[in-house]
Image (cartoon, rainbow, N blue to C red):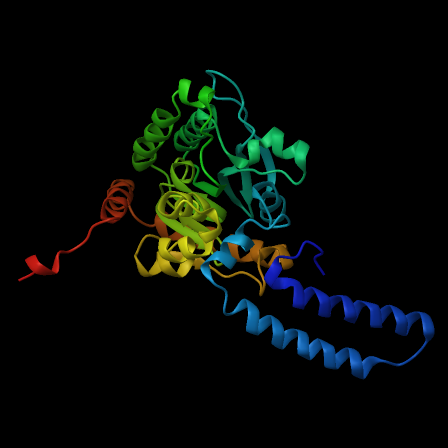
Length: 323
């Protein structure tokens, strides 16, 4: 049972607490309450289905931000082994909001790059709440080029509300660093598999988000702006974030329908935080399948297909001009 419940999860958490209390009472008082516990379990499963299979876009955003949701380093520990972290952009500093390194998945060597948030205030300050500075994006592309040199596939995990918008970041070329990554990632001659594991916010996400396969976890979101930011701009009222989330079409299913992403990664019922290993296993399977598929084509065709994939995003047809 997870104690950090969201508002719409409260009926589920209350029922889970009742079940735990009955289990403890049964054990301590030697009273048989198994039939009552089983009845509550069945009720709990039905309630989970009703709530989690009918989530609104705003509720999915809340799950994407859940404080217990697995982050990049969690997935690395569950999926990979022999991880060696690589630090620094060789120009300014080491941005801890982005983790980069080399690892193995089973017998496969990979390069792993991902945003990293913190679990408490101190770690969030260290990781800058997952919002990278220019040096983070420069570190990321430096490591990708190392991977290209040694013909190692690249996997990236996106989980950021957006690139850091501070004065220092702008002075050091935030926009240029992201734009440079977009250009360079298009032509990297190794497979690149992208996962949005939590928040996928604007250019901060795109800075490590150009690849051959773009996959979004079921309860993650990918958007040009946060729902709160959108509501503040459109209606001058952040309280209308739920309306903004719906209008932005930021859920995994919306993105798949528009052809922006390739795959929705299934999550355990209620979100990845309820069974992190199950979520990790799903990601691992898609990584291995993606690397196999992309590696089967020539490098020239791979780069060409990647370029065309991203050029198609945002195209529209004017019905008035259609023959």
